[in-house]
Length: 214
Length: 214
Image 1 (cartoon, rainbow over the protein chains, first blue to last red):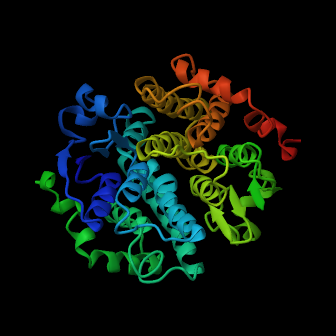
Image 2: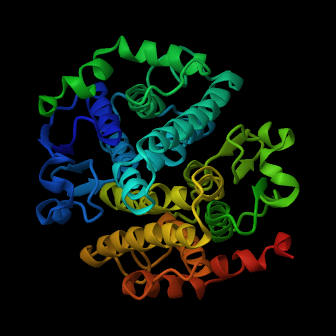
C-alpha cells in the first residue's frame, strides 16, 4: 500500500493515524506542497489525483483520493481494528464529527484558499491569519458543543477507544496551534486531544515525526 | 422522520434526493436561512444542531447532522434502494466524488463564508461572485477529470443507477447556475446532470419545487 502524503497536510495526517491504529504497513510517498511550485500540481501527481490534493492511497485494487473516502475504504477493507462503532446512530455521530472538521473548518484554511485570499483578493498577512483563526475557533466551538451535549463522548470523541472522529480532530488541533488559534474555549476537545496524543498512533504520525519533515 | 431543510441549501437538497430515491416519507421542517437574521442561528435550532447549519435529520433513534453523515446513515438504516455500490473500490470512488463537492467546493461558497468576505474583508460584490465562480469552476473541473478517466462512469457518476455521488453533484450545479458559473468545460458532469434531472427524485426535490420556496 502506498500513501501519497505531506507531513503538514492535516488530511494526510488523518489517514496516517488510521493506518497506524489498524496496524497496516505502507510506503509513504512524499508530495511536497511548496517545493517546485507544488509537486501536487505537476502532471505526475495529477495522474494519480486529478484534484491535485493530498492524500491519495494506492493498493492492489486501485487508487482512492479524498481523506474521508480513504478512511471509510480502510474501514471496509481492514475492519479488524474498527474505527466506527457498530450501531447506526453511533456511526452517524462519528461521521458527523468528522465532517465538522473536513467540511466546516479545513477547506477554508487550505493552502490554495489562503493563496487566493492573498494573491487575488489582496488580503494582508494579518487579515489572512485572522481568517484562519476565525474558522478554526468557530468550527471547534461547534465540535465542542457536539461533544459536550452527547453522552457518547468519553475518553475519546465517541467511546473509550479512538474512532475516525479522533483521526479527524487531532490534525486540526495541530493546524490551530500553528496559527496560535484560541483553544481555551474547547475543554472537551483538548481533553480528547491529550488522550489521543498519549497513543503512539497519533504521536508517531504527527507532522514533525514524518520523514519528509526534515 | 423529520428533515430540517431550506429550499436553497444544496446540502439539504442532497438529502431530499436520497430520501426520494429510497422512497422514504418525511416531514420537511423549513429553516429559513435569511429570515429574522437566520433561523438556523437561533437557540431553538441550535438545540437541534449546535453547528447552526442545515440539514438535520431526526428519527426514532435520534438526530443526525452533516449531510454526508445523514446520507451514510440513510444508506445503513434503509439499504433497500442502495446508493453505494457493493464493491469496496466502487464505494470509495462514490465517496471520493461526494467529498469533492462537499469539501472542495461547497464550504467555500457557504452563506457564512460569503458574509465574512463582504463584511469582514470588505470584498465587493463582483469579487465575491468571482470567488464563488472560481471554486465552482475549479472544483467541477476536478470532478470532470475524475469522471472522464474512470471506466465506472456511465449514465450516472458511477454506473447505470444513481448513487450518493449524483445526490451530491446535482445540487452543486443548481448553485453554479445561480451565479452563472462556467459549465461548458465539464461535459461529463452536465450529461450526468441531465440524466439525473429526468428522474422525479431529482426534479421533484429541487429548490423551486420545495414548499418553503414560495
